[in-house]
Length: 125
Image (cartoon, rainbow, N blue to C red; front, top):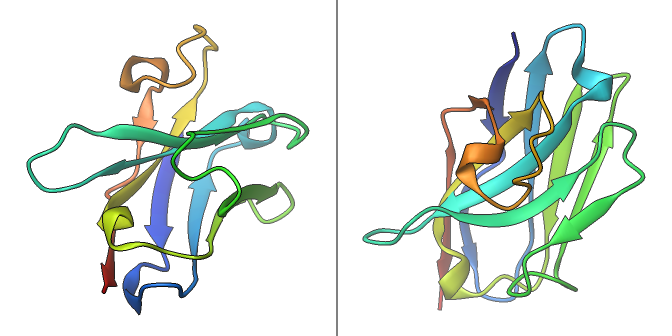
């Protein structure tokens, strides 16, 4: 089992930066892919980024590619999401999620078995 706790959200002006952290428990963390998703009010949750267990493979949604960077430190059991050049449309609750079984749904909710509680990111214009 894996427990995930997000932190680092907050209020920032457009063009600013934030770094989100996802702290994980569990002995299998270093072999577990982790994704970031977000959900804005009245919208469905959407994929943001994913990193493989080793950190060597990363993928991003088109809407954040070039602005956001996902990384991980397995020694600290933590995954990060560095968000630069933030836009008001990035406002959402951000969730990290763990993919223990690798069913292939890398950009969909059903591809992840464990979720954190979320952290709010608000970008003002």
